[in-house]
Amino acid sequence: MLPDPNSLYGPLDPAPDAGYENAPPRMGFFTDTSVCIGCKACEVACKEWNGVPESGLDLLGMSYDNTGALTANSWRHVAFIEQPRPAGQGAAPADVLGAPVDANPDRPVDAGPQFLGMPGAQPPGRGTGVEERTDFRWLMMSDVCKHCTHAACLDVCPTGSLFRTEFGTVVVQEDICNGCGYCISACPYGVIDQRRDDGRAWKCTLCYDRLGAGMTPACAQACPTESIQYGPLDELRERAAARVATLHDRGVPEARLYGHDPNDGVGGDGAFFLLLDEPEVYGLPPDPVVTTRDLPKMWKRAGLAALAMAAATVAAFVGGSS
Image 1 (tube, rainbow, N blue to C red):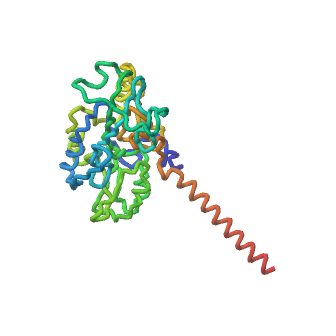
Image 2: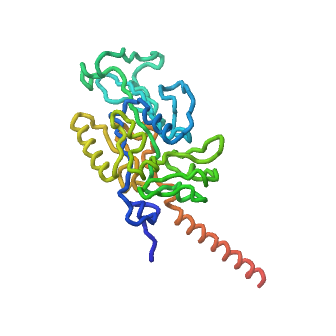
Image 3: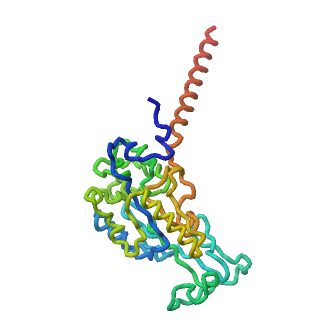
């Protein structure tokens, strides 16, 4: 029997591919950043339910976000991104790290800081219209493990600590993790992290214990605006497509989905997002690829090179002896 050509890339249903018979529908997250208010209720709920240690008060000095990134002690991270909105222009561009760049390149270098306007009693743009806004906007996104269809962390784990669940999600069994760190470098999103005091890997489990009891994950349960939505992945993709169409009709052409496509470099994500700007602005790779996709080809080439070297060595000895 030939191996599945999609075993390391391409669209597939991950739970049956992992050996589950009569698996339930694949479950996942759809995070609609257009309605995220940055309350961080998801971060708190995740910590409380999963017993994740507190991260301390880390004043980063560059944002109101004091979490900074996904870590072993932050399985949900609400990013805060500030973007100036000059009059008559859309969203200010951002560099590859997500930091806003000067939207007025003709402004003298020594002109000093620009006045962004004072906060008002009404939502931004209510009185002037979106095209005439002179204030700035917040982009907020609750980031989480993507629970990839093709998860490189699973491929490289030497102890079986990482496993695929019947819901298609990816979970770390911390009791058999040996702290090798292979999964950390294998993740194309930089999600997995080691806890400093014990060296083991930790990340979101999509509340696997709650899923088995028919409950909603803690973060989605706590989200007051339903920015984080949980359910069967196929239903979430339909709902997300409808939401993007609605935003386009309402004059938000920059709305787009990220991680929803089963034909992308990781076979689609079990946790995908609606974004209001380029993925790089949110600190996401624009075209993620499962890092183990080319392993068979690499081993084949390495084997051929080894055979060629062995043949050359034999030929050299035979030629020298004659």
